[in-house]
Amino acid sequence: MAASHSDAGPETTTDSEDAVSLRDVRKTYYLGEPVHALDGVSLSIHRGSYTAVMGPSGSGKSTLLNLIGCLDTASEGQVFVNGKEVSALSERDRTRVRGDEIGFVFQTFNLMPKLTAAENVALPLVFQGVSRSKRKSHAESVLDEVGLGDRTGHRPNELSGGQRQRVAIARALVTDPAIILADEPTGNLDSETGRQIMGLFQRLHDEGNTILMVTHERHIAEHAERVIHVLDGTIERIEEIESPRRVEIEAF
Ligand SMILES: Nc1ncnc2c1ncn2[C@@H]1O[C@H](COP(=O)(O)OP(=O)(O)OP(=O)(O)O)[C@@H](O)[C@H]1O
Ligand SMILES: [Mg+2]
Image (cartoon, rainbow, N blue to C red; front, side, top):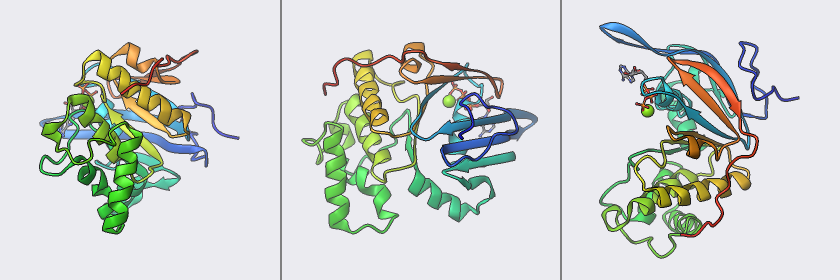
């Protein structure tokens, strides 16, 4: 049986149903005084679940996402992604896990300005050795799924903010990752465009994807099934959302 969602103790297992699991993870930055960005975090993210992370600025939300996303390494403790202990891997193997298992959506989109939407989306496939023609057709079909089938040849500066974020989401999806990590995915968007992105995440969740999303907006967090409240580098509490918000119309 899977560990319960709220099982945050050191007994946390690496159940096969867990997309992500952390055991007593600490991250300390040494800049003069040590900063305990994460100070003993244990949690499990079940496969197919939709989780939001909330907490004050500086509480450790991005640090948490970056450790799970293999962009950074823990000072202590264990991080498992899709059953693999990434905290024990070499830099090179971690990079591979990042490319294969993680779809990362950044607040600032992080698109390559000189590449078209399709080329941006296809980029992660280059590192997987996928042929050029397959990359192109796959990137175009994922762009089509996020409602941008008619914008594949546009460069980021020829797209709206919401369209750029959808390109970034398509890029995160193109490798069919075990988990989608999103750090403030609606932070730079107006509320209507933010609603469309929530509609897209809703569809991805309905299709069985695992989503972990940082947000500082309560109404955005309420689209998830549960909210992890982070405070001073620890999990303050985990809140189950009784009936997650649904986006009515998913129009792009
Ligand atoms: N590279 C770094 N070097 C030193 N300290 C860092 C580094 N990155 C983060 N920190 C510190 O770690 C703590 C947690 O930072 P983090 O970015 O995880 O916060 P956050 O919850 O994402 O905040 P925000 O809501 O403002 O994005 C902060 O006190 C921050 O100053
Ligand atoms: Mg942050």
